Amino acid sequence: MVILKAKPITKDKYELLSSEIRAFGVVPSLTVVMIGNDPAAEYYVQNLVKFGAKIGVEVNLTRFESTISENELILVINELNQNKNVHGIMLQKPLPKHIDENKIVNAITPFKDVDGFHPYNLGNLFLEESNFIPCTPAAVLEILDYYQIATTGKHIVIIGRSNIVGKPLANLFLRKDKTGNATVTICHSKTDNLVSITSQADILVAAIGIPEFVEPEMIKEGAVVIDVGINEIETETGDKIYVGDVAYEACLAKCSAITPVPGGVGSVTTYNLLKNVFVALRLNYA
Image 1: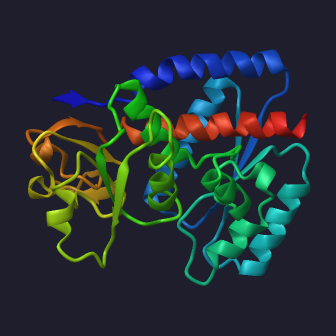
Image 2: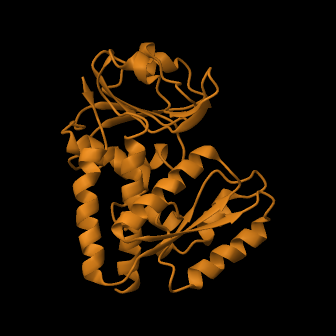
């Protein structure tokens, strides 16, 4: 059984990215727009700041109370769009319920949309022409590629249908390339007979946002399990820890390979986001 750790993947990638940034001679700048205090979001942003500082990407956090109005937030986005010193804009989710996420995402100029969620970028992803592939789906592909886990002809089941992971990842797995050519099934909260479907997967991707949702009976013997989730939970002793969407310890014996949490998909996602900031910088100079 193989633990699909991120560190061997990101070590060389960060070194290469850092050298490319130095050679370019301009510091890439990312502004993260964050509303409220979601623990998983805080964890992700802290890692962005930490690794950005190491490789030469400036990461600035613009934080607002959850009471900010939709119009006020759009004004903030418009200012960032027009600021030539800001190369990438990242809208940290989740957003408060009174804010229409689609409106805010659509307000970000596609050329600073380092998350790759603007309709322009998602449409280009579908056409296989995108500058920005959403960072978490890209991370899943990079992990499978690095560990030489074939997707061609495989049945891949994704639990989760979000615009952030499930939908773009399904399209990427359908591409006619090294990490594509798969048969893809997407499951979600309304799926009947969920266990009977997930237990058919050669590769199971958990992206449902529920702590330790995937249990051994949901996994086919010898399957590869990719855990996209990052959830903060409190232990019996009162300690707060981060866990994925997979019951990791319980599922270890059932699968042939599995990503850890933390130290798996999230770590490669962080790298991809910082890489996209550099891509956005170069687009500005094109």
